[in-house]
Image: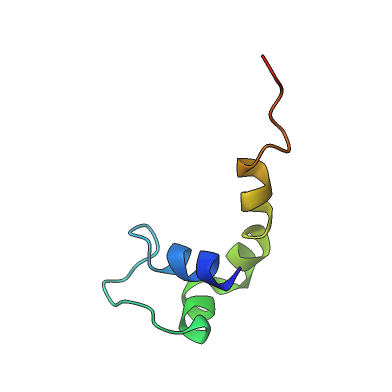
Length: 53
């Protein structure tokens, strides 16, 4: 989970030019509203909602 948060915080869409090196910095950059949505994203990308055919 922490690596996923770090990856999002360092992405171009959320980046401010400075690389995030700690989880505390990532949380500060992303904010609590976005952090609440992050655990849901990996489950939506998996096979959970894919239907054969």
